[in-house]
Image 1: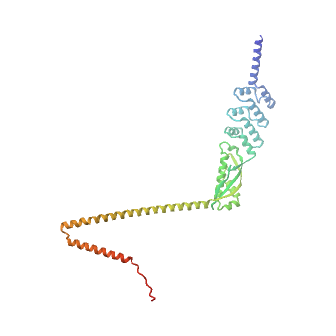
Image 2: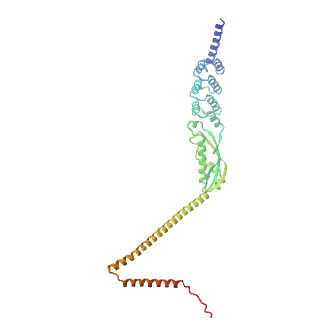
Length: 336
């Protein structure tokens, strides 16, 4: 008997705990006390348990919303958002904050923003208290004016969340990129760098007039140039690089012409040697021709001696001419 009683006692305790788990009477009583009878039903709480939805999360959310004056939002709406993978606590906080700040934020828009992966609570806070974005996030934007002087700029962009544009709208990275592009364009349009240094607000006005916040999740309130420094003389550097490049091209062309001249000289030397070889070859044929002339009777011995005398006479005259050209005449003084 004691064993049976202990078993029954344990079964009763288990059944009681199971009943209180699936039937959260405490939360139901809390809902009745806070909202009245009928707003949160015991059946809804049991259904939440069976669907693996946190009844505490939904109950607290509905109570907070109703206390803030948003009585149109029911438990079914929060359950649906929870099952879709949304953050119920963020939605509740965002709706209450938007209502208190007089920002129109329907429940459907808030859930769409939350399911899109955006922090809807942070978006509402940014709508109330605008945030400042550095453009660029790190370092400076480098731009060159028309006179070739580089300017380094850094801007601070004040933005406010555009809640309807959060779904499908571009992020703050797009704002930074567009502002950077606008600053570079404004500096590049300036005739000289001193003009930009004297009136940096001209850059802000030029960038704001372009409507850079179109299609984004933010509304640009102001663009302030936080820092503006003078960099390198890019124009002079480019001219120096161009001159160096032109010098290298001229040197390459001169080297090409020199190589062609050397090749042509070598070719002429080869041709000269070829001609000399032909002359030597032709001279070697002379004795053969003379022998052939003797054999044929076209040339006699006297003709041969005459030719030899002419050659000797020619050689003597050449020798005398060379000797006379080597003598340097002396200039005597006629003062005697």
